[in-house]
Image (cartoon, rainbow, N blue to C red; front, side):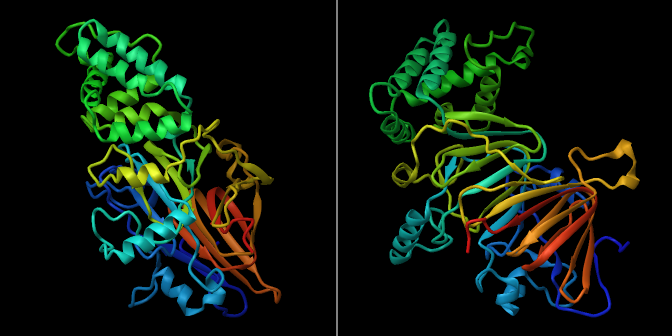
Length: 450
């Protein structure tokens, strides 16, 4: 078998169809210090490493591994032969990422196609510099995204019912009432803002009001911080009894409120979080975030695929720019019934997540080499999996060691063997065959694309 990171061809040399790619993780403050180094087999730097980008996005394109004396990006590869390596003669419409979430990300939404195109054109016409901190649109594209958990992942995703938010506010107010009458009154005033009109319009009006920080917001945030900190057993460091958990408030919701209030004291996003579903994903579970859906990732390690865009409108839990008017114009305020997005089986060892977008779909192959023995079986694994490659594929190996092979009509085969943490680009063409022992995530163009 070929050594990891090497490609071999039988009988004759052909243009590369299996290309090892790599990138340097992006060092955002919310990243984990050790999760990506552990996956990639590199030494931790002591700094947070948040995202590994695997695609042709110009902000951080992947690099062709061991490309020679001159650095070569995946963009360069596509431009060298757009018909062979690109999609419709251009860059990949999707971006595959691995996320290592060590601290909560900002609350955010991404625009749909029309909003992104209009917003980008308006900022270009106004001469807003592309790197300006207050710029909302870095490109004219939408940004739906799908996240699949590798570890437990905690996220806020989509609007829940207003009655659930009012119930939690009432529980917080009741807990504060005995020692913080002003805070309890402020929480009651916040709750009033979530009753009496059409739910979607109430949510939009609430976002506008709370993010402007009107009078009751500050004392309400202070009351939440005190109640949730007091309910935590560690608050009794001085030997005093901790406050009881507010009656009727889910312990996990209380823990999230405590963490958000500690990480972002006085940030209105803490109140906004009460409007959203709190989701704990187990490994292999997913959420799909359609354009305009409010969300925030809080913790965990995950694979994510999205349209190749970096447009973000923030709604709190951040020191960055929050454009309240544009956020309220863009956000979808409809209630989301179920945040989780199911996969569907394709074949033994192969499942896919296929949302209704043309930009991407995501597959996961689990492989189990019979020679490894029963003690090291991969749940749901197959000895071999075949993956169609009507469009280019981007693969990342998240566990084990995997052999990737493709044969053409003439019987010539190209083979690559990759270990955990390595990634490959595969040009469109004949299906690829995966064998070995481990887990692979594969991003490609959406099923409804031409």
